[in-house]
Image 1 (cartoon, rainbow, N blue to C red):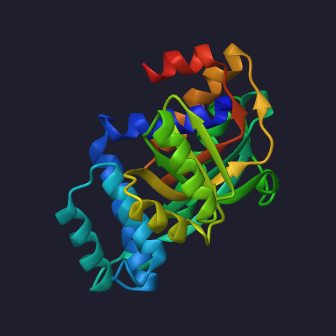
Image 2: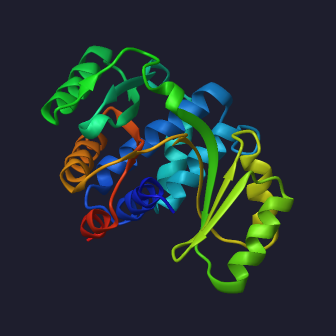
Length: 249
């Protein structure tokens, strides 16, 4: 598994136990609210909301907090005032970075993102400058090993998965964005317990980073992720194993 995929997994694992849980739940609540406001409050009839709810649960967000976010969004709420924006730029070593934002103040959001990039020696780019490097994919992570992982991989392929990767951390399954729900349901029917299931942006090519560049990039990605308006950050950096080992600790 590439250093990029390992970074994505470590980032998720850190998020589950992160000290900034209040900020994380606020971001998850925003994602749920926007999905509910635009597609209705029933997760079974609103695929985007279903994914948002599943993602929130994977981070141990309480069910009553999730329910309140849906109720606020489908009642009188300011959720509709949030704008969805994607910023693109470059980080250390020429890494491509995409930043997904939900904000009620675009001027503040772009200023914060620009400042974080510049502080790390990167820069904010024009719309479309790095989008071509990424493609949207459904990604399902399941913690499983041994023969069970091999059997699950075959189940996933039969259900329509495009690619499956198995390593010591479990099984990572890639689908088309539209195929995520059907593959997820098939695997749940086979008894698999999802660690996560979401649509994300996967780089088609990665940039190998040396130790210094990797450390700088990880600090930048964390700094961006800590911004209140930023929902998700994607990079095509390929990080050395030793740097990731230190980062995971």
